[in-house]
Amino acid sequence: MGVPLRQQIAVGTYLLKQKLGGVKKYPMVLMLEPLFRCNLACAGCGKIDYPDHILDKRMSYEECMQAVDECGAPMVSIPGGEPLIHKEMPEIVRGIIARRKYVYLCTNALLLKKKIDDYTPSPYLTFSIHLDGLKERHDASVCQDGVFDRAVEAIKLAVAKGFRVTVNCTLFQGETPEDVAEFLDYAMELGVEGATIAPGFSYERAPRQDIFIKGKDTKNLFRGIFKIGKTRKWKLNHSSLYLDFLAGNQNYQCTPWGNPTRNIFGWQKPCYLLPDEGYASSFQELLDDTPWDKYGNSSNPKCAQCMAHCGYEATAVEDMLQHPLKALLTSIRGPKTTGPMVAEPTPKWAREELQTPATLAGIPVKVER
Ligand code: SF4
Ligand code: SF4
Image (cartoon, rainbow, N blue to C red):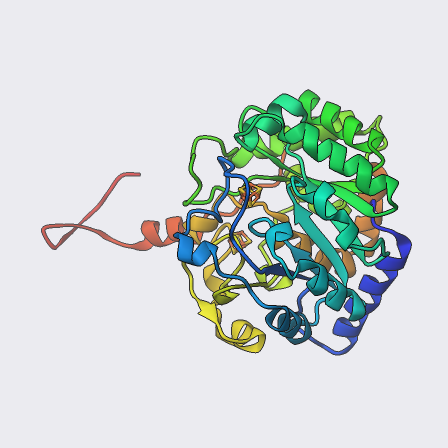
């Protein structure tokens, strides 16, 4: 775990308060998307296909602070689009830090060298740099040559200036455990605090659909990575049980309210990955009016392949709170990389299909499946 003790204690205290207060649905990380405009056009991006008048919109400083206050989560992740394009971003970051929230400013780093002096190192601020692999892999992933070198230069600069820096890596088709291991080795050598890794979510709106890893391939890839990781000292910014879930050893349902999203349209139902499910006008309305049961990998075909941390990290943390010994042992031993994986539940839509009598011209018929 790469997260500093101070932050772990702050988040742990927040979780304890929710538990003692009997709160059933509480947020852990606010996903604040104050703009969709980006200076890259990655093949797997589900955020940048909006028309120009949407891409030109920004959430104001006041709207961002209102979202942070309404939500109350102890951590705020600012993805985008590219947040460094937003002219008020230094002020927004200062406002969140003043509220003693931990900010993860997620950037592709192309503008970081130019803008870095707009920010001050703080235990509350982390630059989370988008890096999907080593040079060839990353430049292919972001569809532009030279981006890897500029991101690495920016990481070195930010580390040298005393900022907290992590890398966030999304895995796509064609990855091998060896490639990912080599990348994580390199990232650690850069002196970053930690890395997040997750399989790319198959956005319906992404320019390319053939790049996403699916189902058992994802779990086998993670098992391969973690097998190599047993002899390495990688700092992964995930709970031990989420990593175990990625390796196919936990059967979790997602907890999308754990990472609620506020963007230029409002509070997004149910999570930042599904863009067409509607918006709420307040955080409370999001909690009260979202049909949460409709979502999750066995409840909704749109969620079928999802293993994203915005849905399942909060589930893993909840499991950790209920089974601390299991979490501790998993943390000590690392995720299980051999043996059978947990069986996946039959998806709800497949069960409904099985229960619905088939008809031919209105006459019920028996179908051999
Ligand atoms: S850097 Fe991020 S927001 Fe920009 S195009 Fe790539 S994935 Fe999308
Ligand atoms: S499984 Fe959860 S986190 Fe993933 S897309 Fe569905 S609702 Fe969102």
